[in-house]
Image 1 (cartoon, rainbow, N blue to C red):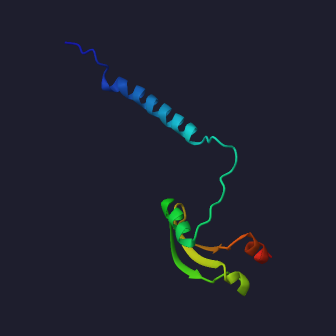
Image 2: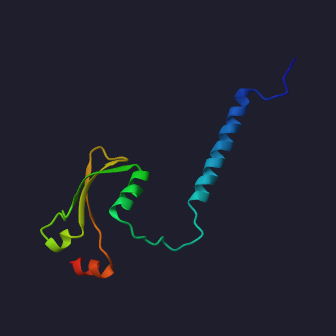
Image 3: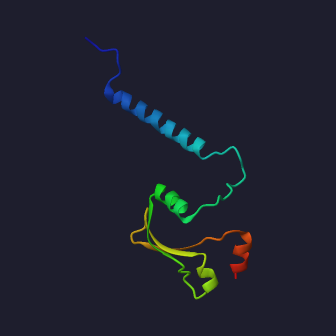
Length: 111
């Protein structure tokens, strides 16, 4: 007795086409925003910054406050040296972060 349902072999290409179309549509919609203006940076302490990095698959270790990577004692007050691992990096990456209390503090140390 013949079946009226399409065979599994004939349904797979159709299913793949539907999935590909759905993924394409989701990618296009996900890349669009309702505003053309860039996102405004928001203040965060070092703990908040490391949480954002962790969510994106980057782990932070070997944190040293006051290590500016240069001999400036004034810049050392705002400096944090740390190591990052994760994503596509084969070996740990050394990074420096400078956190300033306000724009005026940044401008004083910009040179």
